[in-house]
Image 1 (cartoon, rainbow, N blue to C red):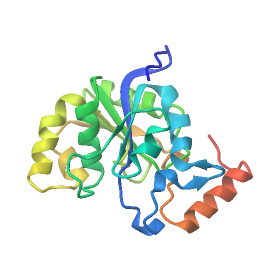
Image 2 (tube, rainbow, N blue to C red):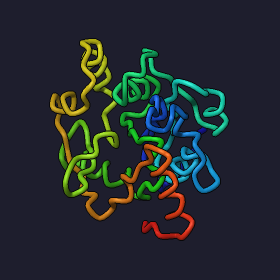
Image 3 (cartoon, helix red, strand yellow):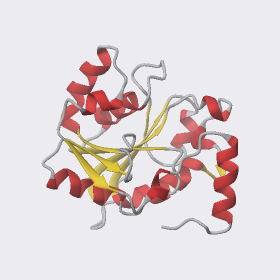
Image 4 (spheres, one colour):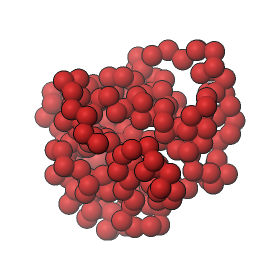
Length: 207
């Protein structure tokens, strides 16, 4: 699905929906209903207008994810190896020089998420850009050069899974998101889902 627009950057976004979601009782988090829509629908609505192309990284319910209208790419290894495995799947499938990752359980994404990360990457002459929320990095949101695929495959092939260790091998830029903390509100369990649903129903979230 090509949706070229002057407002979209030439970037492929990959939504990470490939985890086990053990704290959600094993339910597929991207398909959990939130305010009347599957969680991934909220993420797609926020992210698709910012990029040229979207991919969904999923390891189960592939047909249900495909019904949202974007290509679905599973991990190459079926052992649920975490977000770096999803990034690797996205890097393999992308045709753009840059790939952005975002999790399926953060439905309040900033409308300028991609633009801020792109600006940080360019200004820092970096290979990877990640948000900094004022206290810590948010590494599951990452803008990565596609040329790093071989490095990532070698890292995963060596049995490593930690994002920060792989990031440390490359030039990293930080984008200030201390004014956009809602972007990193995620839903890990039924209690967090209920709390966010109540917040959305009252319009309490700020964008």
